[in-house]
Image 1 (cartoon, rainbow, N blue to C red):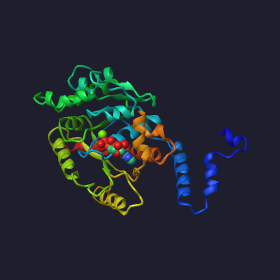
Image 2 (image 1 turned 180 degrees about the vertical axis):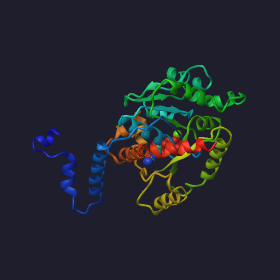
Image 3 (image 1 turned 180 degrees about the horizontal axis):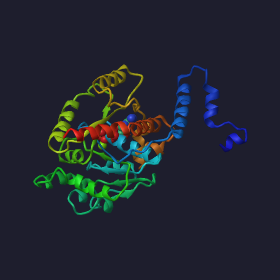
Image 4 (image 1 turned 90 degrees about the horizontal axis):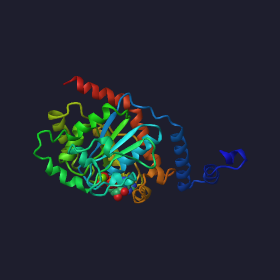
Length: 319
Ligand SMILES: Nc1ncnc2c1ncn2[C@@H]1O[C@H](COP(=O)(O)OP(=O)(O)O)[C@@H](O)[C@H]1O
Ligand SMILES: [Mg+2]
């Protein structure tokens, strides 16, 4: 802004001037990213009519669950939403990426599940985003699955705590990062929310295991949580230079046309670097395609709120 006032062009304008019409694919990419970034900054993220509770799950490891949880949460928060992230993975990767301490023995989701502490007592503010709170997980959580296995209400431990929290905290989104399994921790997440977000890695075996996940969600709907829907699928680590990525996207879109976001997340090294600086890519590389793509995914998620909340109401009505 200040630059323009003095008649000096901005960095984006310089790039535009140098590369436009030059036929350089790199230049075109930079210009494209700059204009996508600007458009995103100017976009209004509509707030949902009521709290959307979303579990990010896929029993496969390394498909982008944690990256999606932290970066979507950060982007939503950056655009004004009040967001709570609950880390349900004993690895605590979401806690790390959001800059939250989570060593063994510290108050965490483990204490919440076992009823010792409330969510408000263990949550911590994310240093980079003022309206983002985090319930951290530590390695202690790895014992929880066995410890609660015989409890009669073992599938509703997280739901009980979250419902109590939402009764006196106004939130737009609760996003839960699940571990790579279909065990009791994931079932607790599925029972506590009304929406599933499934990240799908754009690779050869992408759809393998999806049937099993959908099956498990069906069982949870039938036995514990009739209001649960799969609201969102997001294709991650998309490489537009390969036909395979496109094929995976088309295949997922064919099977789940109303659920898959049009936004895909590209494979970019900045997304994988960010956690080692205890940051989301939204802060670590705000102008890069990783942050922009997660921002666009978050916008799409926000814009779909009325449709998603309607679908949940409809399911509740069918009970
Ligand atoms: N779009 C991406 N581009 C490059 N690396 C990614 C991307 N998404 C995730 N990664 C990296 O891949 C690995 C697995 O991602 P992660 O989000 O931790 O998956 P999950 O939680 O499903 O195990 C991590 O090292 C992460 O940094
Ligand atoms: Mg993870």
